[in-house]
Each structure stands twice: as C-alpha cells, then as structure tokens.
Image (cartoon, rainbow, N blue to C red; front, side, top):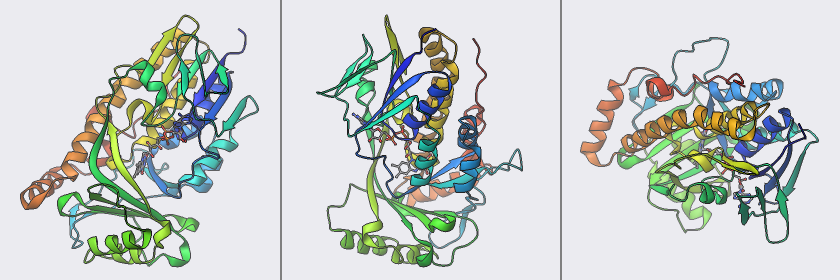
Length: 392
Ligand SMILES: Cc1cc2nc3c(=O)[nH]c(=O)nc-3n(C[C@H](O)[C@H](O)[C@H](O)COP(=O)(O)OP(=O)(O)OC[C@H]3O[C@@H](n4cnc5c(N)ncnc54)[C@H](O)[C@@H]3O)c2cc1C
C-alpha cells in the first residue's frame, strides 16, 4: 500500500493525539494550526484513567508520569464548607492506577509534541478556510494540502464539521469560567486533596494542587464574559466568592489579575449526526470538541479527544478508509452521545438557581451513589475506556 496522507486541521489535544496515532499507523501527516504556536493557555486539565490509558497507548507513558499530578477530587462542598457528597472519585478498580490526575495544559501539549515523529509536518499560522470533502484537502487562500483523509480537530467552532453535518449547534450554558494557575510561592496552604464547592445560582469553584507548577483553580458564574479591565474582574471574583470556605478566597487573593483567563462556556447540542464522511478519493473525520464538545462540568473533553485520536489510528492501521471510518463511527458515536447527555444533565443540575433549585440540587447530589459523578451513568462510565483492538 502506498503511504497514505492525512491533513489534520487544529493542533490541540485531539489534533496532536490523532497525528501521533496516524503516524504510528504508517500515515504521513500535515498538521495545520491557526495559532503562531501551540496553544498553552496557562490553565490546567483534570482527566481520568481513560485519558491516561490513551496517553500510554500513544507511547507517552514515561513523559506523562513526570507531569501528571494525581488528584483526589475529595469532597463536594457547600460554600460554608459542609460536605454535599463525600467523594467525587470512584473507588479505584486498579489501585496501582490513579483515577484522576491534573496536567498543566502546556506540559501536556509539550509531551504530545515531543512524541511526533518526522512523518508529521506542523504548519502554524495557517487558518483553514477551505475544506474540500470531495477531493479531500484543506488549506487557506494561499496553500492547499491534498490528502486521503481530512481530520477535523478544530474545536467547537469547527470549519470541517460544517461540511460533514451543518446541523450540529453550538449552545451556550449561560455561564462563564474564570481560570488560573498560580506559581508555588504564592499558593496558600491547601488541604491534601482538591475540592469542588457549589453555591446558589450555579456558582462553583474547583481547585487542585499542581506540584511544582503551583495550584490551579476554576470559578464558574452565571452570565457572560466581563468587559471590565483585569484588575476590576479580579476584585469582582473576590467579591462573589467572599465568605466561601478556605482556601477559596485565599486562592483568589493570591492570583494576579493578568493570570486569570475567562471563557464563555458552551457545548454542542445537537451533536453532529455522524462523525465521518467517505468520498470516492478518501474521507473526512471529526475528533475531540469538533465532534462532541461537552459542558466541562464532568471534565471529559480532553480525555475523549485523546480516546478519539488513539481509536482513529487503530481503525486506520490496515483497513481501507471506508472500513476504518465505519469502525471509528461505530466505536466513538455511542459512547460520546451517552456521555454528552450525562454532561448536559449534570450542567443543568449544577446550574440550579434560587433557594428551591439549590435545595433540590443538594438533595439529588446527596442521593447519588459515591463516585457517580466521575463514573458518569452506568454503561457510559467515563474511566472504563480501554484502547480497542484492531478488528480488521
Ligand atoms: C473552562 C473549561 C475548563 C475545562 N476543563 C477541562 C478539564 O478539566 N478536563 C477536560 O478533560 N476537559 C476540560 N475542558 C475541555 C477541554 O479543554 C476540551 O475538550 C479539549 O481541549 C478539546 O481539545 P480539541 O483538540 O478537540 O479542541 P481545542 O483544544 O479547541 O483545539 C482546537 C485547535 O484547533 C485550532 N483551530 C481552530 N480552528 C482552526 C482553523 N480554522 N484552522 C486551523 N486551526 C484551527 C485551534 O487554534 C486549536 O489549537 C475544559 C474546557 C473549558 C472551556
């Protein structure tokens, strides 16, 4: 078989994982990224055992052990510090494997980039505007990269997805997230585990120790992005979370205004009806947020993007493009549709408003079995994923 070529649009976690996996499957890859460099947004990611298995399948075991900070998500609390439910993390099935870890996003991107071989070319500063799904190719107004396969790894506002299914819709959660990583010398004394605290009107705060990178926190509040200057936004955050239990106000106070990043939260609903498209000359496929961006309450997105990349490589090692894409669709759609539904329900529950809504939310959370939050719902267990074996 002549060497097959893929053009991947977007060099986030999904694009990099797909590039590594396809290269390992014998493909040549062109990776197109609109940023001038890969996007380290100075934040962190909480992921679960499924993400660690995907990273190991990509051959990143040692590199990952060096940068992953095991994380016990511990107790879910109310602002006064009283527990809502005891444990967010399930009992580990395999006690040698941490159930949750935190990565600094920059460290994870660097580890992924260092696993790319010389059959992957990276082109930064290329904003893909032209995607051809009939004679597969992608490019901008000056260059075109023809290929056997176009991989849409271009995030929630994917340009590639538009050609595969224009009906998928970006839907706002009505909330905005503020996030920061603060360096170790400014981190206040933290309990050993991380924590997550839920207030009225959908306000929530989560933090995690991040070893020599310091500590990570994220705060979610209702409304849109704040137009005020950074120092005013910082003061607003301090005000909104005043009176919340330790170490929340201390973490906010220890953060410099310019370290805080804000993002409007959104997800795809409905999801695209298919993630793949076959053409006479090849095909196209969606991975990561381009296929199934979810509300981030369950911290699923990065792990699922890694799973997608690994699965794509396995499906396209020996199989023809139509067979491999058929297998990918079969392996990825059911799981991600179920998890997207769980994430939507969770976002609705955690965003409950008013006294009555908050009381109902607290009652429902208390009634959940321990570990349910990170296990997701029954068959759609988040961390139960293992790399598939090639079927053809
Ligand atoms: C506030 C917040 C907190 C989160 N917390 C977590 C968490 O704790 N754990 C977790 O697992 N997930 C979390 N997520 C979700 C996670 O960040 C995403 O699911 C994950 O980054 C998806 O990766 P991706 O590669 O699919 O997309 P992206 O990270 O969006 O990458 C897409 C890439 O494509 C590039 N691109 C886009 N359009 C073009 C174009 N036209 N041409 C060229 N390049 C293009 C972009 O520049 C970008 O580099 C969080 C998300 C948010 C918003």
